[in-house]
Image (cartoon, rainbow, N blue to C red; front, side):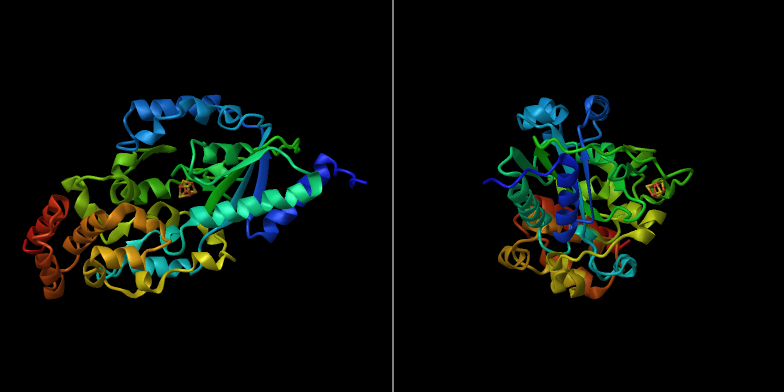
Length: 353
Ligand code: SF4
């Protein structure tokens, strides 16, 4: 005899318990209405704030309608998983040490896509054990999904003025993941915005990429400039990048809600030693083979060795004019990549000013 199916409310409890058990910090369920969010996205794209991220323009219909992306979707389950494994004081230390490169906290450990996808699959399998087979698909920042908007509508948190999702009891240092499903789960209500009159993230942004509340010009954002941008970093922005060689966390580090940021229970997110200990000149000396070996399984590897050198050249140019840095830059002056050579020469000029 088949076991009795749990009622939707009991299934929701099972969902929450199993999500917490798998290292997720919170879970919400919604039947998202993405029409307004899609209009806002279109206005943002029309203003050109997406820069070279043309993938944001693609698949608009799939982004706007969860049932188009995954037929049969009745609900979207959102989960968040904290990724900090070291105190935030270490981020401040790295940012203020010009001999070191700052790497966005989310990228210090193993690539989150694989970790989250695996845990989301496990969560779905656990629900199947209670409910029987059901229709679902998991997403982790890998498809046209308006994940912050969906998480916001399900009450997981609110969109901060820096445009990231924020939680009262968890700040913003977490990954989001989704399960699109036909399970008839009870939905959750959105939570209020708790930014109030604060605008610290807008004021602190080194490149003034946050044009106003909830309005980000990605073309000025250091995460875009060091990760997404394939070509030359605009010269006026280079001095503002400081020692940030992969991403930027300034808008999160200043946010008062991140006093409540949670430490991650997932050991995969622990920082690679080499990324914490090696100085800029050492990271700059890696050849392509070493870059690929050291960063196997890391999200950083996807920018490739050329952009890695481009970013470090900028950071060296923004540091003190030490003989070690100047010698390291001279060694890259004949690099086969014109992109690397141009940033190296910019850094050398800057250090000789
Ligand atoms: S820094 Fe202030 S304005 Fe920005 S997201 Fe945090 S609370 Fe909101």
